[in-house]
Image 1 (cartoon, rainbow, N blue to C red):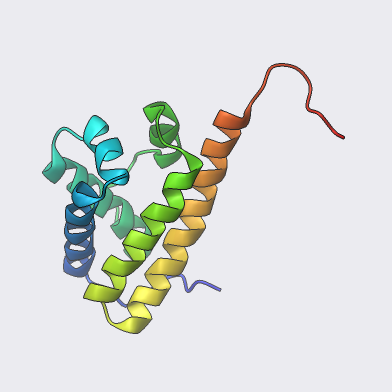
Image 2: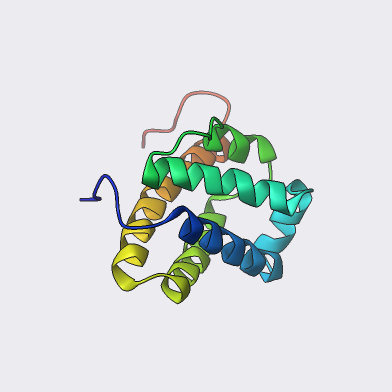
Length: 133
């Protein structure tokens, strides 16, 4: 079970987010997807930092809807989430103490599963009734 809070500082959240997006920009598959949507990297990183601070530290300041953003992008695919999570895990384990990295990773995987399922539902829809055979 994921603890409701774990031992991180706001500075550590910001450090992880900055390092992660530096890695994203170099990634051969994810980099181009993000580049099509992110115009202002510092603003994006600040927004994502606010998301994680709210999710982990219960800090106010984030009022977005990650599911809506990922669905609206149009080119985010379910298979991107496993790549995203693997890269995020590498960043966490490179920067944070093991316990904090594991706790944040568990939370990220839970959120990632939900986002991936939403994207799969969007791209898996077909006209007509489902085939139940």
